Length: 410
Image (cartoon, rainbow, N blue to C red; front, side, top):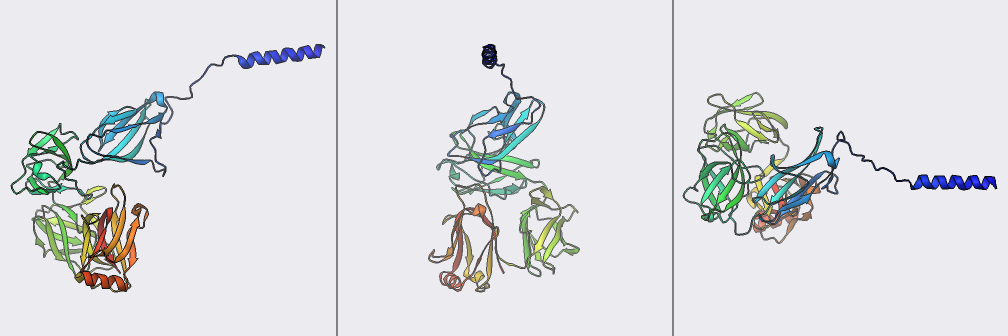
């Protein structure tokens, strides 16, 4: 009996202890490293994009972070702080922007997520999207802006901020402006990246991309590769004073030059990489645009492949496509491998199709999801392909959402 009593007493004691109210405790600490739990993407890359239908559609999203009590969230577009807080609800002018969401703790620890914001214009808005290679100009020289509805532009604003509050210049389009093209000349302007904004006669502001100002000579394209002994053209700005081109230890001074290009005979060189530099008559360097910024020496390549087209074309089916004439394609033998080099800008989707000028014979049937394909993309040029090109007069490289940069064969 005594034993049963003791067991009952123990059970009652345990019950009282179990039901006793526990004091909650917080696991977050101001010394914790910050984590951004949301937004995320399922690929696990930590990169994300927002596409907004028009300038009146807000970027609307929220961020979940830890430690939440001790963390501040900052939103940056193109490096400019536009919002601080967990939930953003903001509109932006039409354009493409780099986005960084930063989480910073009170202890100064930080992490970030990178992505992009694309704001589409209305169909009736004046717009001028810069190519992915960038829009570059030198003060005093005309700069052509291409787009649509440009006949509505009354003023062109060059600004240091997204909303054109810090105005650097307000310019009138030069004579000869059309619906798809206008020209401006910047007065003296320091080097740097500036936003371009259009203003109509009623004073409404429209996004129009950005512009990079250079006061030094800058090479823009055509320098990545060359064919030994062939004519070589490099395009740029402020090229009228170029004096020499140096490839490894070979210096070339016989150059045909304009303000925007130089042409010369490429030196003999073996297949592989070579060092390239360009000098002006006053001894100053011509700079090259790279992912790391402006440099005065770059690597150029002699390829075993033969180039049949090189440039920058963002394909959009019939509206924008690469055209290679049958006269150029006559040197491509049946059985050759053709290489298509491309970039993958932000777009609704990415597809590649290669056909003839009548769109009647697919040299390369449509390939979707090009962001996951090999680059350059290769295919074999068959007898039927060559016959179709010769009959119709052209090979077309079309599709959507890709920037085609080079086409070669071997």
